[in-house]
Picture 1 (spheres, helix red, strand yellow):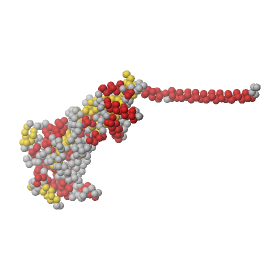
Picture 2 (cartoon, rainbow, N blue to C red):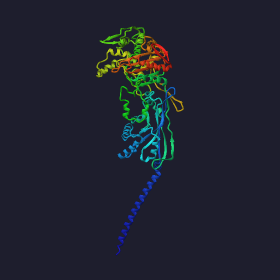
Picture 3 (cartoon, rainbow, N blue to C red):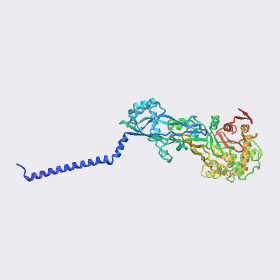
Length: 621
């Protein structure tokens, strides 16, 4: 029996509705798919095309070679050599620890490094520069390069890179002055001066490498290459290349003969830390600077762990990385008497003809102050007191100036205890002790007593709490020599491009002018000259026969708990000096016995003279 007509109609309507719903759904799906395809191909097509093309290319950063560093004669002090370095991108190691260790063990075996050392190197380098590729070994051979190319799938993230490495033709020559190069740290990357750098890039660390880093560094380039599905470069796949721009060359003011002589002189006392500096008194150009013990910067061209670096700082007394010219804190002994004489004469405490009787000692507040060796020189004026280096004469000046800050003011005006502004990082300040300073220290519980007259007496002869360094003393003596101009010492002289064209010259202005009466200058210079080259002068046995007239001063500083420290400061030629040389030798005893002979070697090199003082007579060599 057939269904009623009404049921057939209702059944047909439901079927039609279902077909319509399904058809509408299908149309909607096709519309969505069409819109998505249209969006991918038309709206976002360019970006996806770029991504697809990027999957076929790789961009590599090409580091620029740093500029050379030259002495004033154009001799190379630092340049570059190329090296192959084994580099690991740790982010591409297997996630499974056992698989990663197996790969690292095999990789270490290729270059003779144990798995323990490989993992330690990765850990310690990542502490310094997290996320940066880790250099396992530099100076690897080409055999390793070929092997890794043939087995690239087994060592993902491992490659051999051609890099530039700093080269030092003269090993440790001027090491403290030059500085080193190392990977930029995370903290440094946050500094404005390192904007644009990436983890793994190298920057100057210390010395002129750090000060002039922005000039020496250069600009990196890029190379884009086409790769296959495995990420391997295809033959002839280089697409575009932007060559790196090499850094500028830096020429220093260093005189090679002075530098060699100075370092040789310090090396004559291999058991004594020491330092020297030679400077042009008018321009502030540093002609030579050295600190002993020194180090070979080449060791820093290889990957170094923190533990290895710490070995260089293990002994704070020996401290081979410390530049004692600019980073030390020393009393100066009698070389400070020049400043005492200047303060007393300019302050009207004495005149050039004022006499003080030296009976060998004075007693103040129950404390006895005496000359070295218990010598007594009788009635002395300023020139004679400088000649024989009478402590009693300067003790009396210190006592007379105790009620004022005259001595402290003049010392600070000539740069003692203040950074000189030299173009080297890490310069120390220092201390000129005063009543205000000690009384404040006493109030804070930092010392057992307040200021006393004995403190000023000690300061007058460069003793007590005085803290300064050879460079500050060089600047102070230079100001005496040039009539009161406090020069700004500097080692950078000029920048040159690869073709030797001068791009920039460095000639920093003087820090300030200090008014020094010409008569005062002449008296002090006469006393210094007599001290060096007249028979009763303290350094006459050393400089008495030197054919160039000079003005010099010995110093023997007490530095508890160490033995006496030797100093010598010399201006040459006299009476219108061009250079000042300062030498100090820790535990070197009397200045005339060690520091003065070292200074003589430097002056012989500067003046191209071959003469030795023997009992005040010149013997040609």
